[in-house]
Image (cartoon, rainbow, N blue to C red; front, side):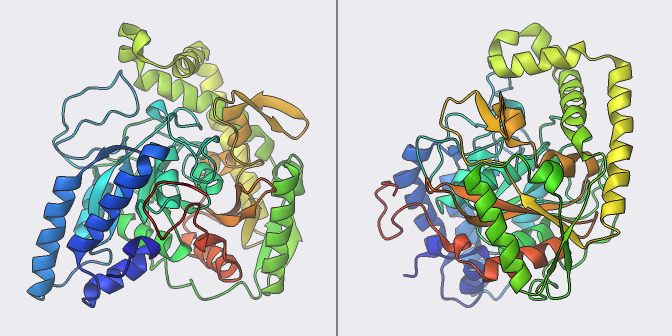
Length: 472
C-alpha cells in the first residue's frame, strides 16, 4: 500500500476518490504512526481511534456505492483542544476546564466532517491558548526545543506527519508561530472569515481559527472548506467566499511585494535574517518587485495586544479564576491578574489605537500587493525558556515570539506562514506573507510561488521509512 503519511491532503483525497487508497487503511496508517512517534512529541491529548475507524468504514461504503464526496474525503485531521468535539470534554489545556463532554461539534469541525475529513484526535494547546511554548509538547526538529504555540500540538503533529491538516487558533500569532518553528504552513485568514463558534475564547476581538498543513495548496483547500458566514458567530464576516486555489499557479511576476525594515527586520537573529534575505531574493527572481515600505503605527501593536487580550481574557475567565485560581498555571494566573489591573480607559484607548494601525496598513497596501517578513524573529527556544532575545533586548518569550505576528491580529488582515529554510542549528524558519483583508488567495499565490522554488515544505524531521519514533 502507498504510505499516505508521505502525501499531502490533496493527494490523499485524490487517491481515495480514484480508489488507489482505502480510507480505512489511511486511518490505520496514521493511527500506527501516532502510536509510534507521538510518545516522543506529546502532540496529542486525545486520539479518537475507534470513531475514526468507524467514520472511515462509512466512507469506504459510500465510495463503493458511488456516493459523491467532499473535497477532503478520506483526509485525517486533528483539532487543537480548544475546539468542541461532541462526546468529549474541551479541556483547553487546563485543569480549570469542565470534564463534562460537550454535545455539539464546533462549526469548523462540522465543516471538515461535511467535506469528508476524518477526525483522528485533539492536539495540545498552551493553557487556554495563553502562551507560546505549549508544554509538554516538543519540537519534532529537536526534542530539546519548544514547538511554539499556543497551537504547538497542531504544529508538531503536522510537521511529524501525524496529521496532514490540523486546526489551530491565533490571537497574537498562535497558528503562525508553531507553523514557523515546526516548518509547516499556517494560515490566519481575515478576522471573521472562519467561524469561532464552539472554540474556547481567549480574546473575542483578536481570536482567529484556521488550519495548519504541509503545503500551501492544502491550506488553501482547507480554508475553502472552513470559510463562510456563520449566523451563530456574532463576529463572523459576511464577505463572499472565493475559490482560494484559483490563484495558486499565478506566480508573482509583476507583483509589488513590500518589506518593512523598521519593526519587521531590524531585530532578527542572524539565521532568520539570512533565510529571509534568501526568500526575498527567490521571489525577486520569480518576477516580483521588492519594495521598501513603511507601516505607520505598527510599533503600537504589542501594547495593543497586551491590553486587549489580557482584559478580554480576564473577563472571560472571571468566575473560574476567582473561585479556583490554583487550577491555573502560574503564567496564566499572572496574565489574568494583569488584565484585571487595566482600566476601562486603557482598554478603550487600546481599541482606538487599532484604528491608527489599520490606517497605516491601508496606506501601505496602497503601494504594494503584499507585505513580507519573517514569521518569528528567532527559531525555536530551548524547552523551559522564560526569556528570549529580540534584537539587543532580552524579553519574555511570549512577546519575543509574537513580535512580528501581532500586527495581523490587530488589523485582522490575512497572514500566511510558509517554511523558509533553517538556521545553523537545523531549526526551521518561517516566511510571513500579509495581504489586505479578504485577499487570502493573493497570500496563497505568493506562498505557493515561493514553495515551488524551494524544497522546504517537503522536509521531514524524522526517518519516514520506519515507525520507530526516532527523530533525526
